[in-house]
Image (cartoon, rainbow, N blue to C red; front, side):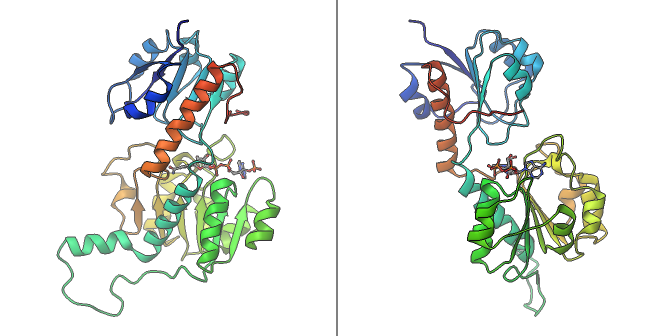
Length: 323
Ligand code: NAP
């Protein structure tokens, strides 16, 4: 019997493919670093039965209409704002994502970014490399304390709760804002629910880990930054689209807030000359929240298992149910 054709939008290690080769026929964009050009992808999906894609690909109505046989789109990410899930569901295309396997790794990174922004770690590293360390002095690169400060988590889902666990270990009181209350986080971690505005006013660290949706787009705007403490540190590990970056730049440049740690940006890759990147009180990372070798491998395997399940007539393991 003919094997289903799966198009993979980036070169991935061969050892990930091997266990699935008896059941699936793989075609792949043979470049590890650059995304597949849109015109190539539109051509390749014409014959594909399934797609393994990354957040660099826009899976929109145009693409889905060009892909008459595609039954399943396996997104190698937990966030799926790159996919028009509504259009996919209309066309009976199953969409899957990679929740859980990346939760702890992303929480590790979020906490590292918080630490780096508070204690000026990137700046301190640059300082030595630039040959500037001539003397030691009491306030040399002095930053902000972390222990005892209030963390405000916006989006208390899987990753939000894992960040809260780490914050608890650092002796930080935990505030959170979420669409629904999280009794387990309140009971187990002592987290306190706050309306969005209250959290902005009270938190020393505001951590964004909320999915990008029409409701959350640019929720961190000029107004939001104005409500934060002037000593506040803003951390974003969710999606760049939840932030108005111009407003963030002005808030940081005019000391409306103190510092920021950003793993995600409205336009990725962000230009090295972008004004945000030039600020000393910002730590920027190239969207590496889930980037440990172990976790990236688990994410790819979960994509493969989802594809295989669908083509074997079983339910996908981690389907995306709502647009
Ligand atoms: P999750 O478990 O679904 O958590 C998302 C939380 O946000 C849920 O608790 C949800 O509330 C809440 N929420 C959604 N819309 C809201 C709204 N309008 N107002 C208030 N709360 C809202 O997802 P996760 O696994 O923690 O991942 C969260 C996000 O992190 C992903 O969507 C992705 O964008 C980002 N991420 C980034 C990286 C990276 O590399 N930087 C890595 C992984 C994930 P309910 O419980 O009420 O639905």
